[in-house]
Image 1 (cartoon, rainbow, N blue to C red):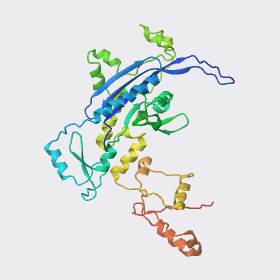
Image 2 (image 1 turned 90 degrees about the horizontal axis):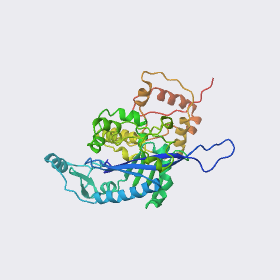
Image 3 (image 1 turned 180 degrees about the vertical axis):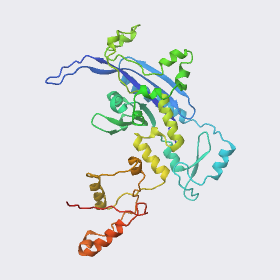
Image 4 (image 1 turned 90 degrees about the vertical axis):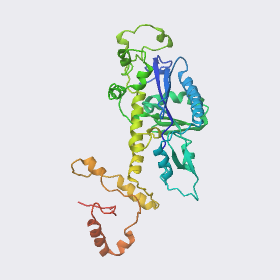
Length: 390
């Protein structure tokens, strides 16, 4: 897999204002949240270059954010359109000359039918032309921590103003929770779907390793830099207008009554991204959540090709089994044991039709004995539908 050329890391901050409407009945509207500022940066994966961070604080923050991200996308595509000189070592040249399969799709090269192309990158690589064309259309991830639960509500207020508003796709979890929003080439994803923890805990796991943050605050003392590498405290209820930002001293301590957790540092996400690329050769910025990422990791590492059911009766047979019931299983390392068991991957067939077994009762016992004698690690297994009676 080709990793995304760059990742946009973004974050909104909001304030609370008194509601303009009062609901009747037992529902009481306490406050209305509005975005008052945002910050983002563009991190280039291969070079480590960083554009930004860019901070905006003012009116119509969500509209301003959408417009600026559209402008950043134009600049990103201008950079991607530039043909850079490839950096090759002798080992790269040898590997390129000896390559017999596409490094993207692993398909074997067929000179008679496939056009072979080079991919412009730091190293010499060879790919089938059709795979290269797919790679050239890689979306640009826009990463929020807790996009699903919070920031998506702010983004959606103004995403319709994007120049690519006619190309919006979403993956919804509920009516109000979006796991993924695609706006043209931009792909909004939630890093909390990969690292399900708060900023305070995630930043502690980095220790003193903050290369990008330290570079941005290089003229500051270590003590001052440490303030930027921990979860900040924000008085949401106190910030009810832009004028609050003009104050030169902290508000009273009782104003810090609401503390929200859930933003991630750029280093956290970049570290996880590099880890996945190193071990699985998969870029998490192409995925919606950890399950989708590691499903592909399983398929890639195992090399299996899972067939789909083409017989609807087989499909319904398996679906009924998923509804389950009550069962007891004892094992050391129960989850590890369950996940290491053999699973079906294809060549699905009925062992015997129901009509045949009804007409030949004697064969039922024969088939049952055959199935029960099958070893757990046999290359072929069986699904059984058992009707038990007390």
